[in-house]
Image (tube, rainbow, N blue to C red; front, side):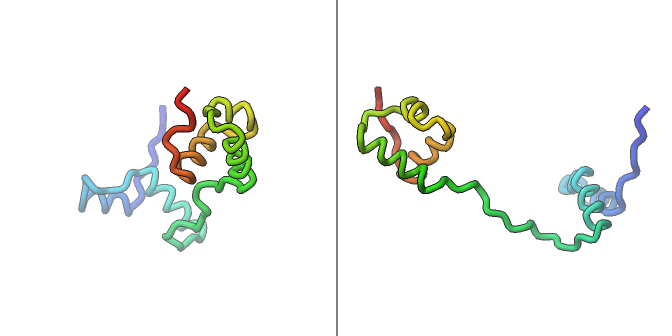
Length: 104
């Protein structure tokens, strides 16, 4: 048998005023724990966002593609094994706006 904890007061109030727009119970409980622990800041903490791609990695791709423009994505994965396929794709599509590296 699982015991259900009572809903926090803010959630009960939100459910009675705006049932379709109320935040879910999990988020309310998390906020209540944070406020009880002394956190009074309601804004998200600053973060750097996506991890940046090191310039050395971008330079390595650039050098490889200058040497042989017919390299495919699979070739780049073999030549630079420490970098994931998604990172290679991000460098090619977002940084350089390439749509294709090599068709064959």
